[in-house]
Length: 201
Image 1 (cartoon, rainbow, N blue to C red):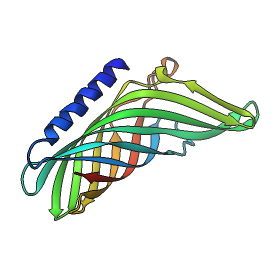
Image 2 (spheres, helix red, strand yellow):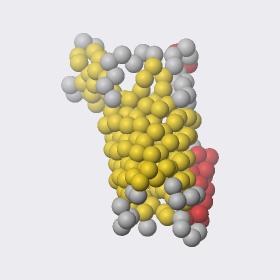
Image 3 (cartoon, rainbow, N blue to C red):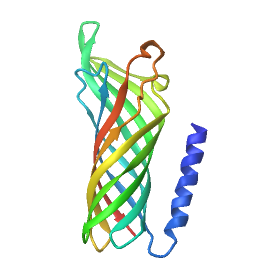
């Protein structure tokens, strides 16, 4: 955890330093996550709606292309319904990540962009919350999930001249996030639709 936080702080300071260069724009963003876990033993998973917030730095390469590294806190996971001692229960898996996307942007026309790039995610918290009648219990499940996640992002965006921007993306998980010792043959991946609004200074 400490190493992850130190790494994130260093990346954040690097982005701020880069943003001080001419023509480079620093921004902040927030938005909605529609997250889910796919793969083995995920039948009945319903998806989890949560949020993300972070910072971006847009570095122009040409008139049409730009490179945009980002750092964001992203609340992900999934939820499902099951039976607990004969009672209907709802279980929510809360997986919190620090995500670092490295986005290539192509300006199709002024303001409108196509976006794609890799992403690395660092798991900072994993909890399972069970709700059933009078039961409301939350348990740490960090040992059940790998600390690093890799994925690819595809998306599009629109940026206004005054600095506001809007993004719609789909994050495709590439790596197996399961690390439960009793289910070592189970393969599961993150996936998520993201809708963001932000502002570049």
